Image (cartoon, rainbow, N blue to C red; front, top):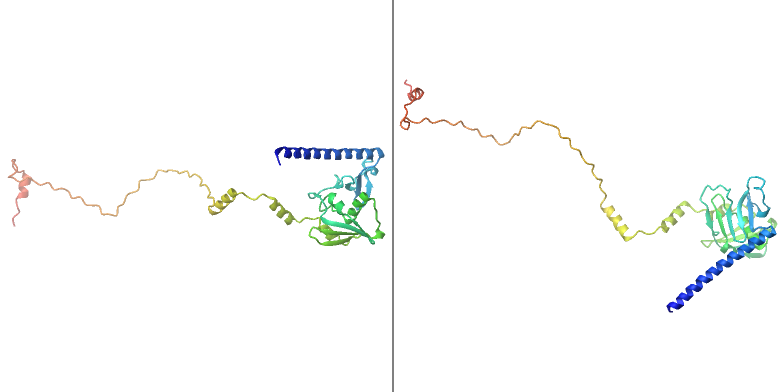
Length: 275
């Protein structure tokens, strides 16, 4: 495959992507224009305490300065569900797909698949704001225009990310603890995922780390300021005995060697005493 063919394929992919995004934007504009002219909306409000859904075009609490009671905002065109801005978020919110590999709804002897809905649906939630099975049913019912009542006892069957099958009675709260466990991510698991997402250290960083472990860093000594004080000179005591210097004895010259006559003192010394 030559360079010209690769260039042509690249240009074709770029043009196709631009046309696809432009078509989606144009269809979204036509849909919003149709909703505006007909007085309808593709947004639905779900109230606190599991009340709703109510079309956004039929909700006017803010117009009359009444407190907002909206918890979820579901967009049937975009297939997204977000928390209302007035909802207090004590925890960081998470946004993504439902934590299920597959799901279906059983009513009497009939089964309705939710796989296509799960593939495109995105929702925002927190540990304090988790959608219940009834919310999932109503989200799907809006897109399919199929509604079920409590007397029909619809059952939501799901397969979790580990491949285990679970069944939940939509109008019952007996298994809410198990249901909520699919949405709550433990702190330890989050920390492990964050550690795995971190880039591994390079070879140079490992070498520096090993060297730091082998040779610990020694603290730099602070400069010592020496203070010199005047001290008396110590006496040097030597272990060796000090030699005694003998006083030199002056030898008197003999009378023969001296030309001068001996003095009186010399004469007295020369006279030996008699007994």
